[in-house]
Image (cartoon, rainbow, N blue to C red):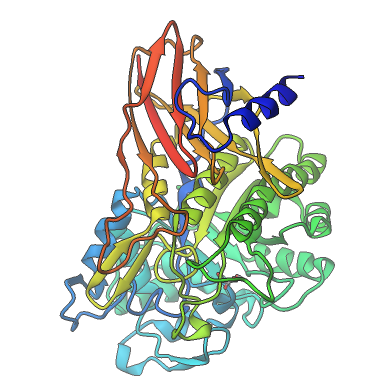
Length: 518
Ligand code: AHR
């Protein structure tokens, strides 16, 4: 009934822009709960692979570079990622991880052997960026490292030694002695350990049964040497809707050997025809968003399997690769996966992060792929120049949710219609932080319609509000090296607050984040 009257009014007002008092009204109710989960800051994690210009040129230029750097790491990239409060960084892959032998990347650079990066362009990898460079960089960034160990072509010994080398206290065994000889006496803090990557594909083309056994073997030889943070061992997880993978792993790996299981899902229109990152139609936009919103069902179904074997939610779900994947920018190396980033990506990021927030009881980490110059990057660089992409701005606006308590929101989204298909137009999540401030992240993915949102916040008792909006004239709009700030958040004041109800008009393809203060 309500739906059909929406449609009637839509036809009536077709062609007009819809201001605050339009009939496209969505009622949202905040339902705070003392036992609601904390939105783990690690949901806002990143990923840096030895792929294209992510590490070399992106993060690392070497200390001889004219680009301002600290021990070879770009100062501008560090500053930008610190703005995001980057909670963790996954490294060195990706597919690269299962070809990487960490001992090749330590010691004097001149003596480090080179290798061929077989997954990404067959380029020479000189190993000048290795364990010390990465872990020191994490300290600069103020972020937690997540090391992805080589299972596909490595050994349990290699992984066990890497853990010893990085975390074993000084001077008590050969690995920390080697570390000290290479210039670092104190251990680093490395809690997150990936046991292989995409074991079903580039990580070894294994069956889930075979990988479950291999996982058990590798995991057995991992040791927590620091007595502080417990190691978090992450099993290589499913690709998108491969529910059998999760089922077999959960069934066959004993709880004592696993802390998290991964999931990878890329929003790709069609693997054979991914389409341009900037020159896309509304139909292509719609399909990208459809793929992105599949994350909701993927999480629900993988979690249902996990709940069956682990009803007390001891094993976390880490979506440690996600994002949009398009054709590379014309003229760039196809193996480098360098793509531009538009308002489409801002929609993808905003809607996906809302899904993660709303599943904070099981999703404890997520890593957008990738941080710099690869796929849905938050930063693009060109020599000394840097761009903060629309995705960067969304992640910065959403950083307020990190480690805040989720406030569940009840609402029914209107449909964003495209031909015979439809998607929920509005996505939202909310949280309340340790200081008592509440934050609401609202996304309207509809390419043509604005909606009036009415948030019933009576249960929260907020008094004053402020907000920011990320919007632009066209979905295809993006920041360029010539115009790096074309898209950036602006103050959002177009709301009213009366008797516990906050009302605002959210424009087409925009992200709004509001802060409420008690
Ligand atoms: O992020 C690019 C690649 O995508 C990663 O190396 C791999 O894990 C995934 O298939």
